[in-house]
Length: 272
Image (cartoon, rainbow, N blue to C red):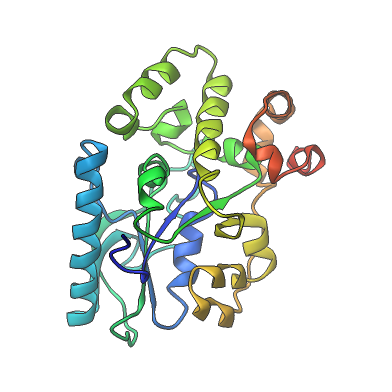
């Protein structure tokens, strides 16, 4: 049973454009999108995580209707389009902190409340799809992994902290893979396996989101149809040129990952 069709789950691989999606959705009327508002401690196991998600949605809706505030990871008091700052020595560091943020917009009682977490929600999708409308943002897999290798975060090492609690066997299996790129590709493949649980219309590509100036997000909130954002693709970020892109591409193309259903070999290689 769904607690509310107006409570919406957003997920996707890290660095796939989910934070940008939140930033854009917050420009749409009657919609609030929260970037990673929950603490890791709220995901001690699948059952308790689901209960905490239910409660958290209710608390944030009440708070937003009362005084327009909610918890999220923010930069300068707002949800940014990118949670990482400029590169220092080729590596980007997180520029967001968890805080209470004020949304200066009118909200109806049934406003769309979107909550985004990457690994946390991806590895709970089997249960979440039975409770909430769920959506995923995906991005060219070569660009995704390239981006992982330019940030300071656990995913840069090919694992996720939340897997210790939600998928301990997978966490251990990833730790035992000696090659970093093999580890990252295995992690990405496991996430794409989870996205198979979603209807095709609930999977939005980063590339389409950019090409439509954000309007592709209207499947999440119809109010996003009014977006007119000036967006440009980061799939060929100059930072990626320092990486062995052809080697990573060859490994991606050799795997039978579910990303092949969304990206052709030619499209993947465009990021080289």
